[in-house]
Length: 211
Ligand code: OGA
Ligand code: MN
Image 1 (cartoon, rainbow, N blue to C red):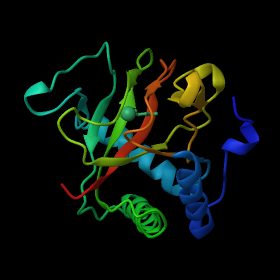
Image 2: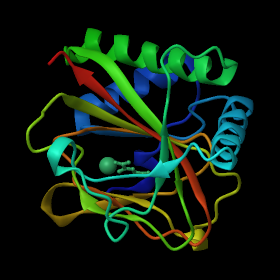
Image 3: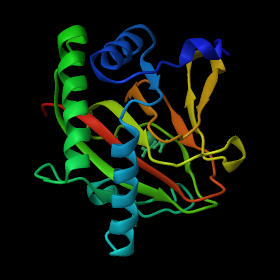
Image 4: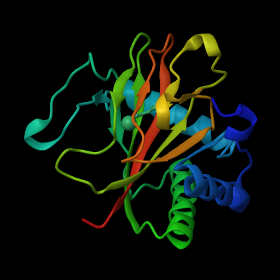
């Protein structure tokens, strides 16, 4: 296991973005606690809960097109896609931060990130997401995966860690703590969500390259 002090970076704004880009360049992934303002994150969590009460979160599927299947044994979350044309202030703040990240990644790493798709996700207690990669078999447009966690005061014993599988059988576990952003190259890392013991909130998304 790499030294944990080494894995975590903190802060907001241009500095935080520069560190995320640097970690993606050197390791292929970045973990950034407190990436977004706590008030914004709390408002995003309130959105997730409100959308869920309104019945807008629907069981997620694996695969897409003709391969699309709902398999709660593989992934237990329900999701609601973000709308690009939102006027919700906290979603706009998230979009601004992600746009700054996209531009910095393109400038420094020439990944040619173009569009973004993302969704709110709620994992009920007892569910997770089995080991997978964020690429569809027939579509390699997803280049950079991101996850932003929306959980207030998550404790280790709540489970629900993101386990990112690195080279040579190593892995790291990321606690899905409010405000933490994880970014990783979509084709490089298998990963899984360990079963959570309480309801788990996040926004997961993908930067795509032009098809
Ligand atoms: C996904 C995913 C990880 C997480 O939605 O594809 O891997 O920690 N999510 O929520
Ligand atoms: Mn994934």
